[in-house]
Length: 189
Image (cartoon, one colour):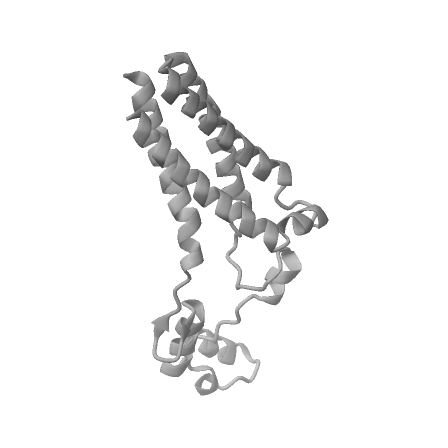
């Protein structure tokens, strides 16, 4: 199980290295420094540094078989996972935004979707005296289809555009979970 954990850790580290390299190549460090309240680079580099340190310590455990070394690697991995969860939490936009949108309240207010009036709301407004004709505010099938197409990123024939880049962080997270479980099981034996 030592070697299975090592292989799992190497896979996790390679996926993480790919994400870090992509982030750096696309100017993530520059943007993080320029944006107040953004993701601190120390969190990302701390996560990566601790994960690599834990990997090296685990490799030492594989060579020596000393249980304290294994538990040291598990402890370092726990801190690395904590920083990884912080990274995901800070990186995940809420509320979700469209590609290319900027973070911040102004961007959210500008991108707020205007939902067409429902017949009931139009009737209430028409009865309220603003002079709107209830027939002008009816939701049509075409309006609903357009909203659904825009909401789910569909183009043309109702197919969803796949984004394979999303799979890398998901695979990294699942590999990290598998590595942690394997490491704890191996150190416990």
